[in-house]
Length: 151
Image (cartoon, rainbow, N blue to C red; front, side):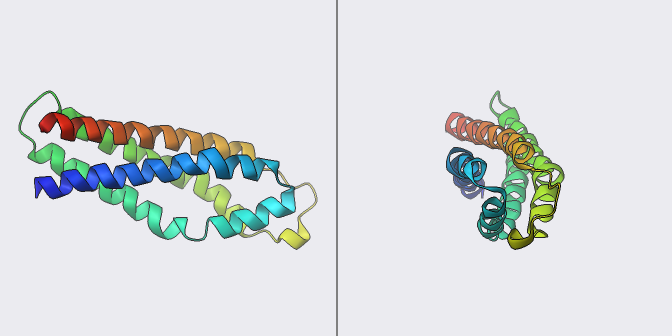
């Protein structure tokens, strides 16, 4: 069971970090370059499937890290599983309280009828996204180190 969970946290955490990194590297700059109505339309399209996949992946990785932390014998690497879990909880919190409210507001807009005085959320969304991306990358690094050191 420990081997399966170890593989899962490395692969799942790597996927999480990789997806967020790819969004930061390509999608965010594209969003910033778009006119407001085009941004709203594309944001609505891009976010459609993330909502179904990313939250369960983050929570599953967090749970697996907590199980690995509890099951691992005392050693210098054991706290890395707890650190990864804490960082992934941070990803979840930033997503739920930073990015998701913005996503919901963007989903309610009509690209064909942008409201007068629309307050552009892209810089705030980017800041939240970069924060959660950094946490996901650090969580992935912690998991890889913990699994390799557990050897």
